[in-house]
Length: 356
Ligand code: PMV
Image (tube, rainbow, N blue to C red; front, side, top):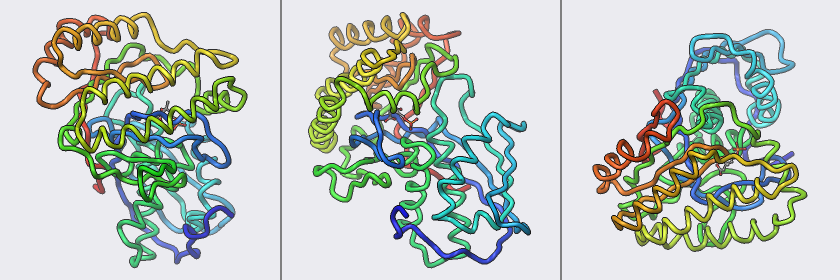
């Protein structure tokens, strides 16, 4: 049994409903490669977002049989059988830590603030919102559970659904994975990094939607490719070094050093996919066009605008709030044309999930 500190006795049967809204997050140092049960090969750190989020309601009532978790799911108002296998696997993995779930019928209603087909990963916010609802049920049976312990266990459970979901519970930044520069950091759950310079606490993230299609490589496949990867050892070491350097950059508010490090991380993530077997080219021509335009804009204006990438073609633009007007003008004038149907989403660093 993994980590008995997260175990609770089965609870009395309960009835009610709970709703949480959990944000998406964007990694600055990326998690790519895992071992054991959803444990990261290297630590990562992310900005918690505020606009891109998932809202999930869980209504629960006692049921007669207690063999496994029973649930119904409505996604954006409709039945969504495509999500059932992933959810069933998640419930199976977490029931040892929340055994009361087996005694209840769950009615899950969930929706995203962003379009499903936008290419924005929703698994982090979705798993975080679900885990928080489950913890709210546990808290009904165990009111002695402190807020900190509750959020920590929510991150622990969310991680078992999707690794990056461990970083979608609190804000403004969350570290997941052990690193000496971040006291209290753990591979089991995300911990908030609070010593963040004010400039980063209101940082902006505009997500340019380059390719709105389905992901071309699932995270599961991508993480697995790191097992046989020729550069895996160097990558994990580099991520570790980046985590160390980023701690003081974030604390001191060094925006230029931030740009250099964050862009190096984005390219390293894609370099891993370019050099795995099989390999994946997830950038599109417009991704590169945007990157080049961003570098030129930074060189000529000296405005610390930088980019980062997820495992896909979309580009996240990161910049200080004080530069919002200039950057927004630059986006509409020079970058919008590279976006699918001209679409982008303005987001910003947020404070974490909210109980509704
Ligand atoms: O949480 P997963 O298994 O979907 O992996 C996410 C991996 C990246 O988004 C590419 C990087 C990260 O740290 O979020």
